[in-house]
Length: 216
Image (cartoon, rainbow, N blue to C red; front, side, top):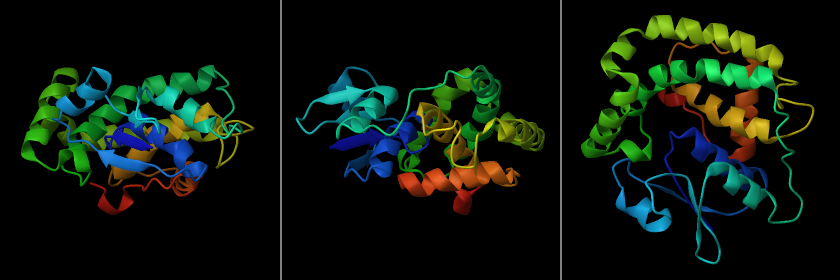
């Protein structure tokens, strides 16, 4: 099987997780941010992740991919989401904050989708409409980082342990790690021990590297 991704994309991280945790071989392909033709030829729209199944057909949507891959051997490891209102509220509250901190940093990071100027320009133009000027967000980093540190302190007690959100491995872990992995790109961010251990655990278990070494 093959998985077409953007390395920065939280939904692509989610789609990668069952492959790593179940040691299922997959060929990863990072698509340039400005490549519209390839995903459109596969699924009719510009979106990632995209799974190329063993039969050559294509599947979009991260959660559909997770469910499909997890059940291939008839022994799924992710229990359904607990539909926790506290966790959903936390993710909703940090959504814009994460975009403000991460969008301007992704285009100067070493991820594969932004290796050309045209790819960087494509992403910047598209996301500026949503976020506003990237330079203003960067200039406000100190305040934004302080806000995120407060939110991370609020998140820590919501985790059942430093390896699981709930009492058992679940889709909630897929959705949370998918988003938390990216915060390792933010230089100077203080991450609570429980959360940093959680990130490290899933990074290793899923074979999905963090960004501490290239933080900015």
